Length: 156
Image 1 (tube, rainbow, N blue to C red):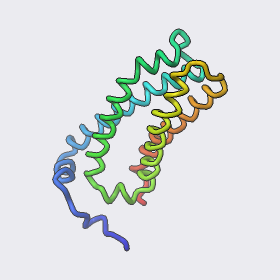
Image 2 (cartoon, helix red, strand yellow):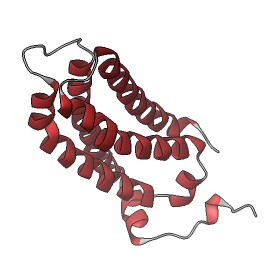
Image 3 (spheres, rainbow, N blue to C red):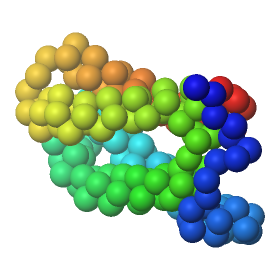
């Protein structure tokens, strides 16, 4: 069954978001700033795990210091993202980049709050494990951002 995206049912949120370019843009700003903060705080810990930066503070200390900011920023990202999704749900559901972004986001969040957190908090794993966990984390978040950027350029 093929749905005509031009005749998709509207909802109050889509009507509001699509009635003004400023409302959609404002929501997009919250989404992007939230991603910048959340991925930035996660990357700080990743770089520490990989031994590339922040040698004055250990990974466990950095994780404790950044955890509230990461969680708040992820909440903002998810809320703003859901509102943006409601602007044109069928467009997003049929967009392959959006689907890649959602799978990547789920994997990145699960990885961040399981493996990444355990390794970062232990502080005594091998440098090879630290490097691997930091690199996988960065790769997952990079995939989220890259696929999100391509949503605008992919039709199906």
